[in-house]
Length: 187
Image 1 (cartoon, one colour):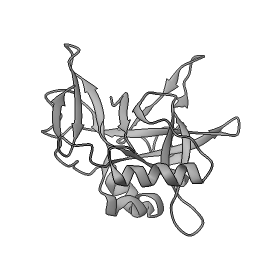
Image 2 (cartoon, helix red, strand yellow; image 1 turned 30 degrees about the vertical axis):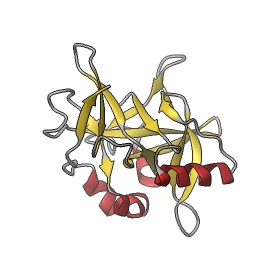
Image 3 (cartoon, helix red, strand yellow; image 1 turned 30 degrees about the horizontal axis):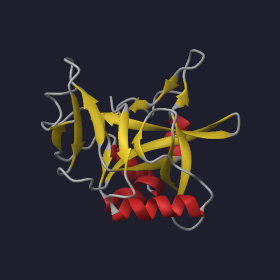
Image 4 (spheres, helix red, strand yellow; image 1 turned 120 degrees about the vertical axis):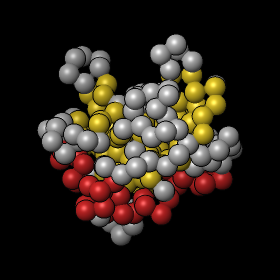
């Protein structure tokens, strides 16, 4: 689920500002279509407010060379691989949409409309050999997604970012929340 997403600072002013902040903080997140293990821009907790950083997408897997890119929101608090990170290091992926494939291999792009509008996805990060790496959360699909895939990203509204990162009670509630309706187009 959600094995790729878009990060288009040249087509979306809000994403452009996020990219600029990441670069000013010394990072060089990839732009365009983001694949697992790419460095991507993330919003994380700062000292007094959120900050934008660059971080590799994917936790190390159980086999050499494997990356875990998604965690199920329903079990993230119980799984030892994710529980501590969820409790202490939540993050937000700023995107301009994500991709999903149907069983027949048809590729769909999802967003709030058919433009590269900003779509925020909840996740967490951890340190592996002193290197921060991130993972995004998926949840059960809503009506806009169920015909294409049985999972969808945990989507946050812009005004929920600070609460997701800093408010533990809110973050736990979001794990079970209904996701907003999205528009899909064949890509």
